[in-house]
Picture 1 (cartoon, rainbow, N blue to C red):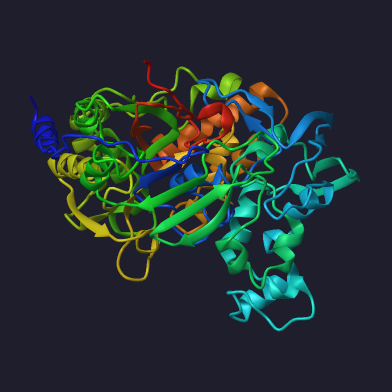
Picture 2 (cartoon, helix red, strand yellow):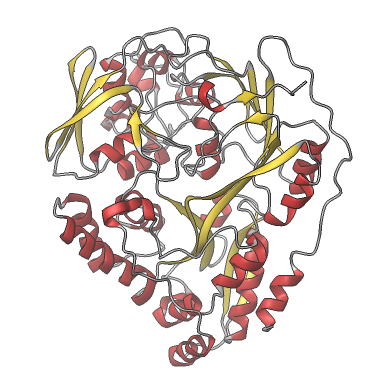
Length: 552
């Protein structure tokens, strides 16, 4: 066993005490109250899908909001299906027309029409009107103004406008054809338009509720969507309470009150489940699955999701300016050991930043950089590295096994001669901050909210993506290929562009390196029939939640 494998094995020895018995909570004869213990609800303190583009947000938002095109979320290949639109069709390379579902009611009782859809994708909602941008420039970012119009009183934070631009860089407009028909029209040919319409961040909002709110923050703390549950209480970093939306178009919600409570510690979540305090818990580490399932009243479900764990590089700082240092790090990661030891083989090392559900755009022959410590040492030597500290920024297990993974990788990097210093951070603002010290290497993940490389590599690493927007990395050839990938309608041209982008960003001038495919495991009461989703959403709709009746 190598030193790195010995180190990994030592990290997974601890286990938690489990409660011995389980007493099911007393439910009303109508519908139960369900409590889900999570490591976090949202990161930004707001329930706005354009402000909170995160793994944790994806989990809760599906109960509140819905998109026009949805997915069969419990199926492995995640096929698209009608959502708030009953059908859609291509008009041309730039245009998709959708027929809206009749009789859909928002949480405030209003019936959804084309006007709500048009508003959801408007410059006003995106925070991109000239007067909104001017207000932010004047420091009026949070929101309430003594203005004569609703528009002037709504100034979303800059992150909303940035995410909207990232998700919809070429959207010209959404056009009302009639009350129940809309058209999405792009400024350029867009082969991914249907995917963008279905993605996390394209959820439909109530125009009236948004415009009548006193401020963007007021709406973002108690938003109005069409989902099966409506917000009744939200305390950031503490609790989110949802109540059944009785007029939900998809049938009577099976849960009366749905509570997401923040419980950061894994041990507390596990023990709370086994004692009956929680009905579900999220982010169960693989080494705790046996603890949960040792009690016959509980089980663990879950598996790999459409998200990859990454290590991300800032090429503008210290030793990271040298591509050979970044290349060396990509070859010094023993990904198979991480998957084997920390995940019990329950996930996999993927073929780079892509997923099989990309279908025709999936490059099956692509591989992540091979684990080769001799090559890694050679690259470090060739770089002229002189022992300068290289900082790795890590959160405290925001991702499952995050700290253990960082420790394994740091030890491996030290073995090739790098002076690695792990910096534990409390939140994402500290992870991204470049004013309090050198920002060199950080943990991250990357999701594919729809089945195309545009959803992941373009959305997060191209010109409008977060990595370039925060100033960590850029590459001229890569950026030109981003545009080709977004606008070409020729499959072979798009595949060639994607392959070259992976060559640049994963091998030649590394922007990131993929560690493994993420996986989520949920502990839950065994008497609840419920299926998890690869899209990370927790679905408590009628067709996905049933409490089984014990046999006599």
